[in-house]
Amino acid sequence: MLIDGKRTLSCLTLLATLEDKHVLTIEGVATGDQLHPLQQAFIDHDALQCGYCTPGQILSGIACIEEGRATDAASVRDWMSGNLCRCGAYPNIVAAILETAGKQ
Amino acid sequence: MQPFAFVRADDEESARAALRQGARALAGGTSLVDLLRLQVEQAPALVDLGKLPFRSIEQAGGVLRIGALATLSDIAGNPLIQHAAPSLAQAVLASASPQLRNAATIGGNLLQRTRCAYFRDTGFERCNKRKPGSGCAALDGDDRGHAVLGVSDHCIAAHASDAAVALTAFDATVRLRGTAGERSVAIADLLRLPGDTPWLEHTLAPDELIVAVELPLGDVLRRSAYRKLRDRASYAFALVSAAVGLVIEDGLVREARVALGGVGTVPWRAHAVEDALVGRPATQSSVSQAAQRAADGAVAGTQNGFKVELARRTVRRVLLQLAEDTAWK
Image (cartoon, rainbow over all chains, first blue to last red; front, top):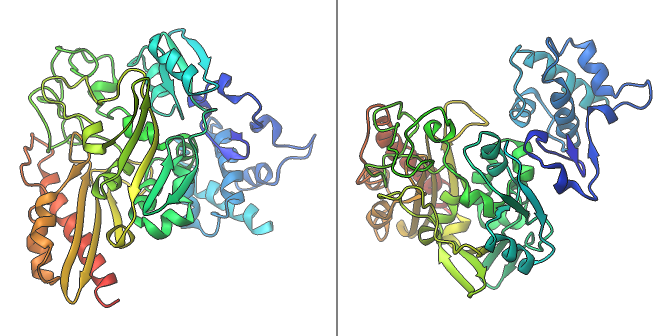
């Protein structure tokens, strides 16, 4: 999730510490029925299999692009290294992030 | 996770009051919340330090003062630190992942608990850090990731911090404030060797808070680098890491600083390497010779012996890199 725009692990964050903070989770990423461009890119690039890691990948990917780190595949791999995908969809995740970064 | 009370500290005094009543201090939570979930740590109460004004990074005279609640991301991205303390910026950037660096604070990073698998898994009976007097399962177990320096018959768990290695190399002090007043201690005096009481990891008084880390600025810090060797390129703890600073003048080494991570039960200053360098010519052979002293005093177990030679080679490589970078400037 993003806390005040910064990616953070929800599993290590106590809700009680988030008073007055802005929290964005996967549920808040789309605008109505309009998917976020990175959500659409994940579909277009088949960047998931079981889907378990996908919310975290997308939030982290949004931040990675925002931080200006999605410049090439090596940089995306490095700056997305905190998000594990046991299905091994990494090449497609990297492609989805690079495509979305390129459109901005 | 066991239930616990949650208290938010509005100021230092309310934080100390909670600590006196047995609460544990919560900063970024990346170590403590993890261990609470694993039930390695138990806490009747947590006191959230997040609102305390300890986050600024500033230069005061010849000292770089980093607030205890500055995150690793704050430090890695700070232009002053990148310029004046490259080894520290590189060390924090090599730590954990972006998500963890956004939460983890420098104060908490120093006090983080070990990554020893026997400590982190309550399924193992023996761990002197978790259950004082129960023994050490690593001594006759899988010790590949464990320490070879500062070890005892009671614990060989490695200290996991990258930042602390850079801070140790460059004589950082930690500013502490408690009921009894304010004091500064060197990292080496904050973190305890395991000895026969490995469950005692630091020298903080029960109601003392780390308020800042202070790093003396200077040539040797400005000409410094950090290198971390690990099993994969990113998001892994160090097998061996080295923070090194080197100042060469007229072909002679004027100043040298060397500290190692991944090999010690605490961040490990390699004074023997520094002493072998200072005042001598900065040649490839003298640097290589000095680096041979990097792991002096090491005691290897069954699988971690490779760290001894890896430590020497890591130090040698960073020294040569710095010599090349600075010798002709």
